[in-house]
Length: 166
Image (cartoon, rainbow, N blue to C red; front, side, top):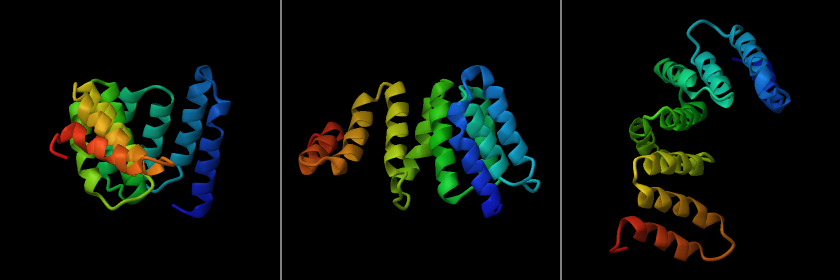
């Protein structure tokens, strides 16, 4: 859209904690009003609405909206966010295998600040499928670079969880 709209969306999200659960509908209405300003067919509309439903505890309502946003062509940073959040929501509604399929290619995507979030969401999906060692490997691998010491050891341990020859 434009910077003014993006600033107002950011301000709405900054106010999220001002809406207790019993007023979650008011927050979603705020997001809906902003979405109404978008041109028809914009992928940002269903993405922001999905985020609002998801953040207020309704993964079931968020899933189809994330899918719609991606189908409309949401790409880049927000597209990657949509994939992470959709995968998490799919796990919440009992479809973690879809989350794994959606996020696995993101491991090879160009690196950005969402890399660790990809690994964390993927680890949760894997754990829901009983693949805890793979999930732990992802989480340790994501954590290792942030440690003040033992980065190499933890990275090696992460690899060894899924590849005993490592």
